[in-house]
Amino acid sequence: MFEHNVGAESNPVNLAEYARLARKRAEPSAWDFIAGGSDDERTLAANRAAFERWTLRPRILSGRDTVDVSVPLFGRTLASPLLVAPIGYQGLAHPAAEVATVQGAGAAHTAMVVSTMSNRTLEDLARAASAPLWFQLYCLKDPELTLSLVRRAESAGYEALVITVDMPRMGRRERDLRNGFALPAHLRPSNLLMEASPELHRSQQGTSGVALHVGQLFDAALSWSTVERLKQQTALPVLLKGVLTREDAQRAASVGIDGIIVSNHGGRQLDGAPASLDVLPEVVEGAGGRCRILLDGGIRRGTDVLKARALGADAVLIGRPIMWGLIARGAEGVTDVLRLLRAELEQALALCGQSRWTEIDRSLVALAPPCGGGWSAPEEGL
Ligand SMILES: Cc1cc2nc3c(=O)[nH]c(=O)nc-3n(C[C@H](O)[C@H](O)[C@H](O)COP(=O)(O)O)c2cc1C
Ligand SMILES: CCCCCCC(=O)C(=O)O
View 1 (cartoon, helix red, strand yellow):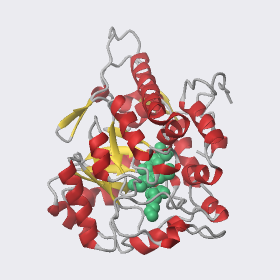
View 2 (view 1 turned 45 degrees about the vertical axis):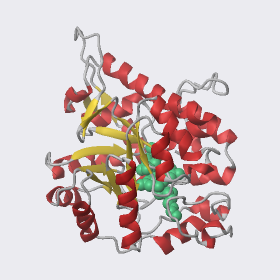
View 3 (view 1 turned 120 degrees about the vertical axis):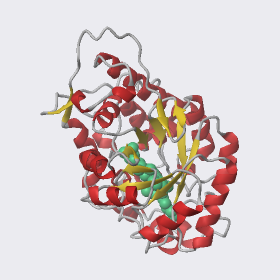
View 4 (view 1 turned 30 degrees about the vertical axis):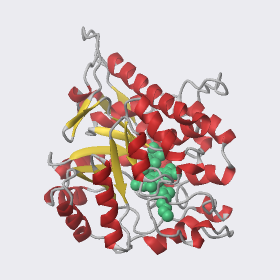
């Protein structure tokens, strides 16, 4: 394993170094909440392992000396195929919470998906934004409350609605159970105007306050009919986050869903679910060109982004590394993580003899034994 830790304290040069720095600075139970997965964390590990199984097939003497990673998506051109994934409760990572992330993403010209469970209101975040924002929706037991979130996101200028469909209930996150993890009293789910439930803030070993809150609040009977109704109720492009099979991709496309995010929630929900990269080709096939396809889970290097593109992703979302940047350095850290990843992507694209993100195809990758090295921060629980 290649260790490249020099300078990590002062000036991280890659995401693994950000992970190490963040781990040192974070409050331990908050770190476990962010880093952890469910059960045995097999799916969490599988997300990384899947990228290591692919190699790149560089073409030589291309004669190209420019790179263009912009990507047209839902009526606008994004500066890069990187988006900030929805992450709840970012107040655990930094006092400025999602405001810092929005500012950091804006400085890197990167679109961000704001979670229903943000610690700042979606309106405050829209005011702080200088890059496109999408809104991630958790469907709640109360359909009126759910719809009111959609209306607020529309009024505030959010450009797409991402409905997360893989959490009708919360995965068993054993780190949180061990820690008796609960949301600190000063942090609130700010988009929900009602009083937060006391359980969310009650720390008790063997329980997770966050999981109890999900049980009280989320629609455990979430179904296609809810998604279809929401699609009819909004003019925003609608994406489903958490699709992992050909069959569900087919169905999503047939009911007019605009985009699919191939995701296992960063290994935090069903342990034993496949790595998102492994099922990307079948989801692409199921969608049959009718939906745009995005992917998240385990992206830590520019070359990972390229592999996802070669296997059919139009764009990718970055989860935990954004939190590492936020913990380590606030808004500047978020910007730096996104700049590092984009610089790696552009470098890899050029070294593969390619110049445009949109022109990359399946011929760029081959299944092969890992070419050595590998992700250098597995001990961070990622
Ligand atoms: C601390 C944390 C909170 C998350 N909160 C949300 C959320 O509120 N909504 C959502 O759809 N996904 C949420 N996710 C899942 C991410 O959006 C994303 O699917 C996952 O982190 C991607 O994997 P990666 O962390 O390996 O990049 C969360 C993930 C983490 C680590
Ligand atoms: C009470 C809501 C908890 C949602 C937490 C955010 C999330 O999705 C996660 O994976 O954690």
